[in-house]
Image 1 (cartoon, rainbow, N blue to C red):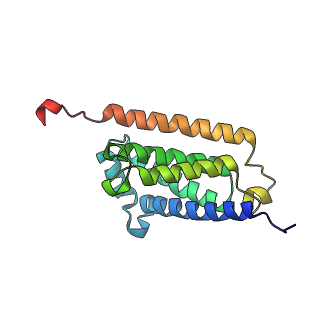
Image 2: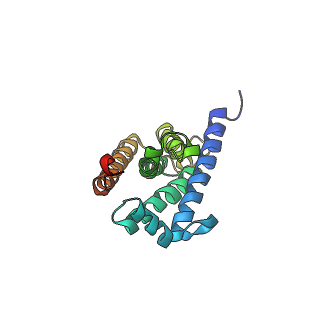
Image 3: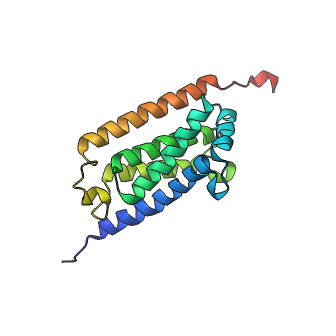
Amino acid sequence: MACFDRRDLGLLALRIGTGAVLAAHGAQKLGGWFGGGGIEGTTAAMEAMGFHPPKHSAVAAGLGEAGGGVLLALGLATPAAGAAAAGAMAGAVAVHAPSGFFVQRGGYEYPAFLGFTAAAIGLAGPGRFSLDHATGHVLNRPWTVALAFTGSALAAAAVVGRRAKGRPTVDPDTT
């Protein structure tokens, strides 16, 4: 019998890869790193995309991506990390949905993939090579999974719903 389970290695690779991508996107929004707009630029973008209040939306999106990404990579509070990242990606999917599925046309394919991957990690758990495992899973209990995903789904629905209500509609007779 092997001294390790390859599923644990697979989860480690998936957590680190997904977490790093999410954390980098969040760092763009929060700190302007990697060519991002920082809080000011992200706030302006959020306002243009119809999110209100735009600064709160910018901070929430940045924290959901950066915080969720770092926690996923570490395997710490994995249900909350996956739910936070998935919730942030739900907002991105809403923005890109009018352009269709494929990213080549500005579609929602990429944020949907990141969101589903983060959610799957949050649901599956972090595996043995994680801080959750090292701490006896005190932040990775069945009730935390239910609470985190319910809270994230409700928050994402409220944010996306508020954005949809505030967006101007286009009258096809005037275009």
